Length: 623
Image (cartoon, rainbow, N blue to C red; front, top):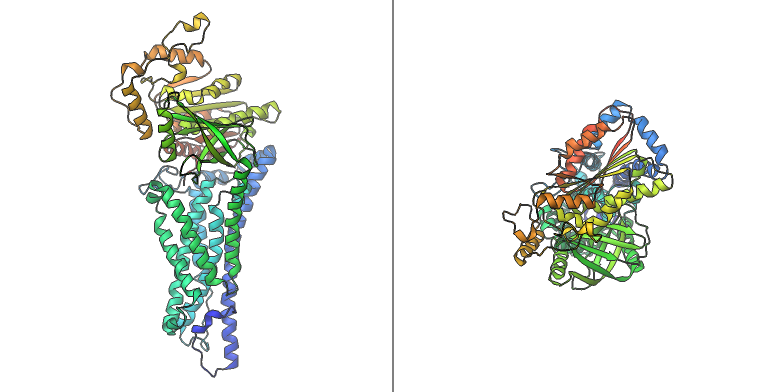
């Protein structure tokens, strides 16, 4: 079947002017080709952005000193500083990017929003201009028929060009992340908005072509054919996707959303393929399918390389699950900020994958998991009910993801971590130390801020926090937001104050915790309570002054501060204390509001005239 298959609905006269027939075909082919040209331009839009992003990322990765020198030079120009301050760095508005909006979704950054808007404008222009009316058209005597048909053809082709990057940006193994260093959440933001544009563009195609067929009375003739029916299937799937992806549904019923979303995407792609395969544009469906298959192939390859292994789980301080997987084989060596998808095979949800940041020690992987909802909540309950709060489960690991940024190339590094978001950031400290030993690091000073709710949060990362004592250029500062509560963890749950003077471990006697207190603790964790408990049981409280003294004695290199930090003021003060010639990297991974505060503060600072460079590296992923 030829590419003119859809021309059958045109009721051409039996006797036509050969010259008019020739010109009619030329007009149609010109419009058809213009659709491809505009589609190529839309792909070129992403190619240009990827090129710029790749130069920046790969240059910084492989030539950090040269790249830093070039960036410092550009930063001396006021327009560049203002562009970073008002366009590339801040949130879209109200200082909110990772914090959820009233619908439960995350708002793209100002730069991401600008990219999406520019692409949307190009899509609209591509389907709205360069249409030519031919008064002697032998296919459609009326102008409305001609223009509707041209719009229908153009929008169909443009939709195909939108769908390809839409599927590409949704993949975990999107090779553009490797080139640009952009976060997965950035590509997910692009994916969501491109998908909406593709669906609306397909609606334009459907409505205009339906009108043409209605005016030419050709619907009864073609509505029984496969390409028509499967086109309808694709449009129904697209319409359901449009409403199914509302942020509220995605956040509240994520697992249901995910698998239903995949099924709908399959029907969209199959319907699209059958609809266009005989119109000389079937290659677009093949390209889209190839992108998807490549991503799934790499997922299976990573999982098969790792295999099925036994993971050791331990409940720490009745709040955090520490999962350790020994003897791990890697396809991609983990870098600071990496995360992996874990499949828990002991149960019916073996096919579900859960992303966690990792701590790497030789060939051992460690995860800190907060018991929230779903499988993590079940694991928490299981461990809590065991006498020693330990167990072993079979897992499979799909890893590693996350793009590396050379923090060691900066003279000053400020790290802002909240809760178990500290995991990936701690790996950056280890990386800086490794580069210093190799003589490659420029870092002179690291401020390591960690915000926890209770004192027992220190248990989560105690060995790593202890190790920071070996790094004299690292200043760990821990904010305990409920400083006076003194909820203790296993590592510091002792009452014998003279134990250390007797030459034995300070952790000599653990305090008894009543069952009621334990029940309250587990309820607080499982429901992610953020309210201060009004009543504390005497069994799980120690004298505040005595307890804090013991913790500080065991971690003398750590500065402990009470209350919740004002990160805007903290970042401002730290940047002012640094030399104006120093390059500064600010790394963050904390609760949403804190990350937004850090972003807003850094955006304000990059506009100031200084010889050094300031960059924000945000590890928090939201979608």
